[in-house]
Image (cartoon, helix red, strand yellow):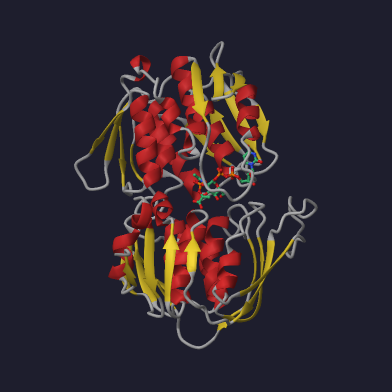
Length: 442
Ligand SMILES: CC(=O)N[C@H]1[C@@H](OP(=O)(O)OP(=O)(O)OC[C@H]2O[C@@H](n3ccc(=O)[nH]c3=O)[C@H](O)[C@@H]2O)O[C@H](CO)[C@@H](O)[C@@H]1O
Ligand SMILES: C=C(OP(=O)(O)O)C(=O)O
């Protein structure tokens, strides 16, 4: 999509009503695809959504000699890593800035080839997003790393060795880096202060199916006993709890009712508790969750994002739009990313009252409190939103703008909607299916 194709006209004021389906998680599927690189046999990944991040990783894997083809069922990919050793990666620069996933190729490529090249990373612009923990842990395993103008060059002079690592912060990507590296390293790796997001547990399930030996303690410690060889896997990806929560927030903000087929309660417990505190209703059945606005006033809340099992940061932006419709003062403390509240200035242009603060307005001081970042917000509501011209800043901020435009009176022009394809499967079909009045400009 380019030019006017990348703009969506949203005529607001209609509640979202109906049913949509979520498939596998954006934050698991690409990593499970990378895991296939570690195997000596083909892997089958099911419940794969058609989103840009999957296409990007597919391209990268193919460049590295993995044959990726469609399986028998819809949403199934077969990944055959038999030709990795003979791949020609001359075009890898074309993948620079595509997503955050290339950094996770380090361990698998070092095991298979003894070297790896990682181009510049992409991902949402919601903070500095350094990768220092990743490179620190790879050095612990015995890798050498050289930073050049075009990216990072890594080598494993000998087989990587298991080690004892403590992460400075329970980073999702760094935990995945350790997992994807330790499974074939020599000896035992003990990782403390690990991230334990549901997508990480699902990646551990994938690796265990391949033959890895991994245990998880209740105190954020993960132990991995390296093995000499891994096979393939057959796995159904866990559902996307982030997409599900986005549609739930859209139902609340537009005073609608949306059944999210595929949504799973277990991975969404913290979100569901918060949703109930705001005044949203939900009903869980075996196939999904219905979310709705029961009528009457929504309640203001205090909300702090955190690592799992806390309130996931990727749920924050869509829910903030619903909080503009709650009565009273809501407090939001973003503790995972230092710059994830910038999207609120456009909501203010639409009529919201959101004030940002550099202080930690939460129960506990976070890493950003003394560092001059606008990472807390006070949302006063309820406020009537008016349609506006909006430019999408990042993935969840983008979906939040769609929600705000749908909840607003009048028409909004939302620019940059292609970014939403990175993590929301078929959202352009799902919106009208829920009764949203959206159109591409003539
Ligand atoms: C593709 C994917 O799965 N993305 C998710 C992943 O991102 P990602 O894996 O990039 O997020 P991390 O958990 O690593 O980052 C969390 C925090 O740690 C910091 N940090 C991280 C690595 C590092 O080397 N140094 C460092 O300082 C980051 O700047 C950030 O402040 O987890 C995030 C937190 O749940 C989610 O919001 C993203 O949707
Ligand atoms: C921040 C996100 O993703 P990424 O890490 O891929 O930028 C997200 O999914 O909201």
